[in-house]
Length: 161
Image (cartoon, rainbow, N blue to C red; front, side):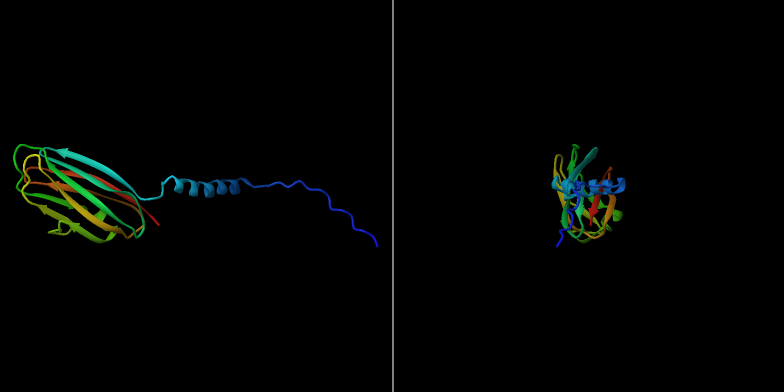
C-alpha cells in the first residue's frame, strides 16, 4: 500500500479587490459611528431675537423612526411693555413628518398656541411631543408673533430608519 504524497504548503493570505476593501471599511465604520452616538437621537438648540420677543427652541436634530421626542419653544418678553398676546406656531411642513402630535398648553389652532399676556421679562413655554412618522430630513420653523413683531427660528430633524 502506497501513501499519497503530502499536499504542498500554502501560505494563508487574504486577497481582496479594491471595491471589496472599500465595502469592508464602510461595514466596519457603521458600528463604530453608532458607538459614538452619531446615529442616535440628539437635541439641538436654536434662538432668535427681535425686540421685544426672544424665541428659543430645543428640537431633535437626529431621531429614529417611530420614536417619541419633544420640541420645546420658550418665548421671553425682552421689552419694557407687556405683550397682550403671543402666538407660537409650528410650520406645517415640519409637522407633516410626525404623527401623534400633542401640545402643552393645548393648541387653539392647527399647530399654533395662543399664550396669555406676557409681562416684561416674562417667559412662557410650549412643549410639543411628537412621534417620527417618515424617514429622511424634515425642515421647518417655529414662529413667535405678537401685534408688534414676529420672530422665526429654523429647525431641522433627520429621521433614521
